[in-house]
Amino acid sequence: MTKPNVIFIVLDQLRPDRLQYFDEFSALKQRGVFFSKMITYAPYTVGSLHALVSGMYGTHNGVDSYYGCLDFDADHCITLAQYLKESGYCTYADVLSGIIIPHQGFDEVNVHDEYKDDLVSRHARLIERSIKDAPFFLLLHYSKIHTGIIDQVVNQYTDFDEKYFNHTEENTKRYDGFVKGAASYIAGVMGLCGNLGLDENTLFVILTDHGCSLGERPGEKCYGVFTYDYTVTTFACLLYPPALPRNTEIGLQIRSIDIMPTVLDMLGIRVKSGFKPVQGISLMPMISGSDRAERDAFVETAGLSGPFPSPYKPNICAYRTPSWKLIHNAANNTYELYDLKQDPGERTNVFGRHKDIQTDLQAKMRQQGSRVFAQD
Image 1 (cartoon, helix red, strand yellow):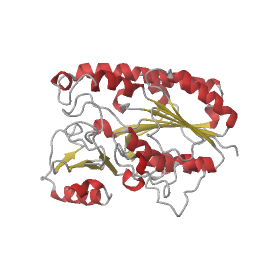
Image 2 (cartoon, one colour):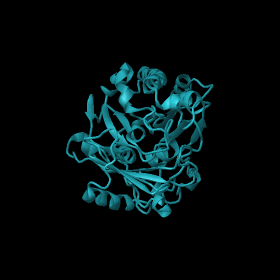
Image 3 (tube, one colour):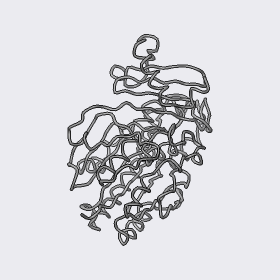
């Protein structure tokens, strides 16, 4: 059996709640399986992508902070690229920065200039070149939303600037302008893949690493400061006609760490023993309908800016079930508990009112082994 190519497309900082306003994303969702409620491990790219390609939280792979990329436990963790390389794939990546993914397993990691490079044409050239090396694995990083936010938000406003935090409508309009560029990118890249005949022999995994603030919480202009849903709820779209259904949306809660074992499962690649165990679980049973159990998720962040900067170690973490979220902030030693069914916007902190629930979630949170609790 011919091995399918694998193309990961990471649309940096794309909120899932904005997809419905763009025809390009609506068309994409109809072509495969769309997971609308995927919880990222970290609401910033470095921690998020290391978790994605290792199938485990940063508490296990070592990358639990902005400056933690050098702490990736390469001796005891095997990445998706390594598994594919050992299975005969040629492996390439094109990213905003060389520090955002572990390099082991990649034949080549390219770094683009977010201000100068046309990513549609750049990634088109990489796809066209990779066809000669089939089967291939590509990890493509679309960084233009990030670029726009840095230029027009981060560099323009302070962390508590009322000109930003009191203007959600204006912020949303600005943000949607960046999303429009991402929609055009997807249309261009997927159109090229179709013209090259890759649709039937390529597994596409299209997702985002984290979301973005539109001014919901003073102190967080963009992402990485807190662990509220507008930055930690993400999405994933999987396309592969020989093995996956079309036009299927799954709203059950999953984790970004589940993507790596799902790909291995689809390709028939077994996880190796003798290394740190993969924490994620394949989504194939959920796709087939034999598993309808939602998955609890652990999240933590290490703010690069904002009111609680801590780029060298995490200081805020959260444990999210489908119905409840507990947040612990070690910087000021506080807890927040949200009833997500009644309060999806996380506006009313009910910590102290549901003792059994918060005790259970506190225990599960501590079981993750986060360095957040070393600061208590």
